[in-house]
Image (cartoon, rainbow, N blue to C red; front, side):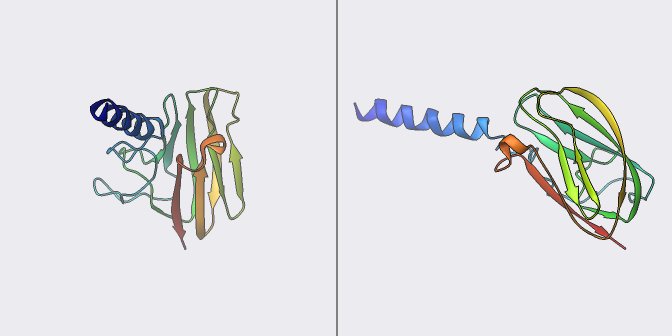
Length: 136
């Protein structure tokens, strides 16, 4: 009986981590600064992605997670891959949302001013989110 309880608890923990996007790849939150290629410059294209699993990201063209950007205008290519998620970007002067029921790709032109920015999947905001800073 003890062995069964231990197995059930271990499986439940594994499912909880997998369901919340808590894998070791850091896919749910922007946590690393760009370390390769040229620094990101205003005018660059950024890649936003949400789904099909419980993953959300904002990356540079080099595939690095965005943690800091210089102020300016950017093109954001949004790839929304699931009807249960959205990519919602907010910050000073910015409030863009891909919509929960919609899927597909869209392109936003966004002007970032200095300050803190946040993106999330609204229905899963406690586990699918990221933050970055924009500098002057």
